Each structure stands twice: as structure tokens, then as C-alpha cells.
Length: 453
Ligand code: ADQ
Image (cartoon, rainbow, N blue to C red):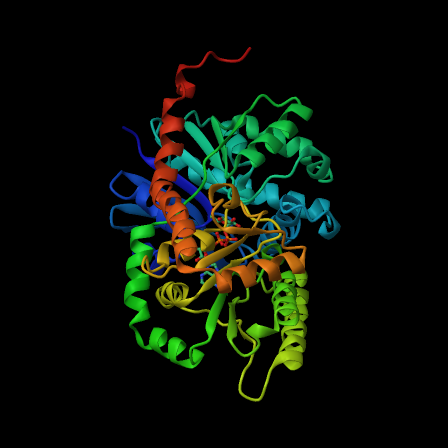
């Protein structure tokens, strides 16, 4: 049996190698642990000269982390501009935010080529390679160009839009053709698979996408939640509420998460259902993410204004409607906050999956579970029909769902939560990785294929 080679833009930081921070690292760590494996990616370091650089290797718990550096120019062109400034908005259906520059595309290809150049000499013929996410669409083709014959799978963590949207990308055709190199292409939902297949068909690419919904480690998250409610932070949060109900939002500060729309939905709750005035607190935790990209700076400013306005309009001298935090909160503490919250509010405008929704479900107390208000546009929505599903663009819809969640009788809360709980425990991070890798192994090895003429 060959090794499993995971490739992602960022590898877990040295601290995350022993203590994974998010759903993705948990899922992948489960997949790499116990098998002979290597995780290859960017170190997170920028250096002026990468010519002749050596791959840095560090082995933790049997997993070898192999990393390379990037120049500031590569970081800007490949990561900030092309990956996060172009592919991210495109895949989240935000055509108005696209700005395409040939130089960024060149940097994107250059970094993918650099990944391929440094990874290829580390590979053995029976390795299985699993490439992750939009930063690395062309990597498979570049590995093939370098003569790599191993099985190569690709998983996209974010949505994929239909051809009518994705064709706005001037190099869409080229990018989709590069994906022919993969033996298996995985996406989060059936909708994404249909969209991507439509794009492949439009460009005459002979690949089919398959859906593999990512999950979390529910047992681990529940355990953290149970411990954290009793911790100092958990107790302090509960005491600070003075018996008020808690609505909780946890996101990266990203425009795909629908944060301004969520604030407007909450404001509409206070306006249309004044019985909640002074009786509810909305805690939004949204640490700054991709702070170097201009659209993210604008979002932060917009949110600060909105939160200030809503608080100014509805606060009393002893109650603040919104508590808004942009500083990071430890993952364990967050698990406890989810358990304390009466309502989990997850309203992305578009999201590959959204693991926060699943974490909220996992953290609940079975004797008194809270309600989940979830956007139709989260990849998790089709899996969680027992959530209160909303259209995040409609503030009144969000307000109605919040009112329902805050007033829902215990038996209905329990019934809905049990449905969601079963799903979250059935499709975990571990089953996601196992299912993808089994599907990849089941395909004929490229070594056994007929050579192309
Ligand atoms: P993200 O856009 O980062 O991930 P999400 O799935 O919600 O979105 O979160 C990933 C992890 O980050 C979760 O474990 C979550 O707890 C953690 N996280 C989110 N906000 C946090 C905060 N404020 N503080 C601390 N931790 C926080 C991308 C896609 C998603 C997809 C994942 C995994 O955009 O759609 O679900 O990858 O495939």
C-alpha cells in the first residue's frame, strides 16, 4: 500500500499539527494518521528568493509535513489576487467583484508549477495524491506534465457556479481542461457537481464531479463543549446574560458569510417583535480574515457602522442588543458558547458546506437543545432540513425564523435537533475522507491505463 500525499495551499501550523483547529484539519488529520503519509504545502513564510529552495520537513505523529516558501510577489499574485480576489468571489457567485489581471494568472500558474516541481521528487510510484481546493486547480496537470503517474484526486471545499457564471473567468476553459488530469474530482454538494459537470460539458472536458459532503468530529466537539460550559469563560458568558436568551454567530469575517444581511435580519426581529427587546443578546464572533484584501477591509467597515447603528437605535442604558467581536476566540471556548446559545445563526449568502452549523448541532445539550437558523445557500442546508431554513437576502424571513427559534417549545426543539444530530453523527470528517479515498482507490490505477495515442 502506497502513502497518502495530501496537498493544500497551507499545511497545518506546527501547533495545529498536534491540536487541529478546524473541521478540515481534523478530517484530514484523521485520514493521514495511522497511514504512511505526507502533507505538502506552503509554509506560510514569504522570502525574497525562492530559487533553489529546499523543502522543509517535519514529522509529527507519523505524518511528514513538507513545506516550501513563497516570494511576496507570488503571495500577492497567486494567493491574494488570483485565489482570494478572483476565484473566491467567482465561486461564491459574486461576479460584480471580479477583477482579472493576466499577471495574477501567471503568478497562479507559477506557484502551482513550483508546488509540482518540489513535490515530484518526493513521490513514489504507488503514492496516492489528494489535492485540496481552489488554489491548486491546475496542480494535477502540472504533476502529470512532470511524469507523475500516481492516482490523483481533487476536492473543492467551496461552491462551484454554473457555466453562465463561471464563464466570466477569462481563463475558465483552460482551468477546466487542466482538471482532466485528476482521476477523481470531489465537491461538497449535488448542486456543485451538476454545475461543474455542466462547465466540463460546455468546454468538452471528459471529467465527472462527485459530491462528498464534509463533516466534523462531533464526539470531539461535544466533549469540548461539555467541558467549556463549566470553564471560566463559559460561566462568565452565562452570567453576563442575566437570563437573556443568546443568539450566536461564529464566522470568519468574509463577505460570503452574509454578516451585514444577518445584522439587518436581527434588527428586523427587534423592530417587528418588540417583545424581545431587552430579552435577547446577539453575540457575533467574526475574527478578521484576509485583512490584506480591499473588499475585506470594506466589509469590516460596513459591519462596524451597521452594528453601531443598530445598537444605537435599540440599546437601553442597561442592555446592548449586539456584542460584536473581531478578535479570535479559542476553539474550545467557542464550543462552550455554542452549547450555551439558544439559537445558532448561520446565514451565508453562499457557502461550500459551513461546518459551524454542524458544530452548533453537535454542541447542544440533548435535554434542552437550541435551534439552528440556517441559510438555504449553505452546502449544509440539504443535509439539515430540520433547521429553520431562511433566505438571508430577506431580513423579514430571518426575523421570523429568529422569532420562531426563540419561542419554540421544547418538544419541537428536541424533534428537530434529533433529526440534525443523526445527520451530523452519520456524515463526519472521518467518513468524508474515507469515502473520498475509497472512491479514489476503486478507480483503475493510471499505471494500468492504456497509453493515449
Ligand atoms: P470556511 O469558509 O472557513 O471553510 P466553515 O466551514 O464555516 O468555513 O469553518 C471552518 C472551520 O473554521 C470550522 O471548524 C469553524 O469552527 C472554524 N471557524 C469559523 N469561524 C470561526 C471563528 N470566528 N473563530 C474560530 N473558528 C472559526 C471552507 C468553506 C466551507 C467549508 C469548509 C470545509 O468556505 O464552506 O465548510 O471550507 O470544507
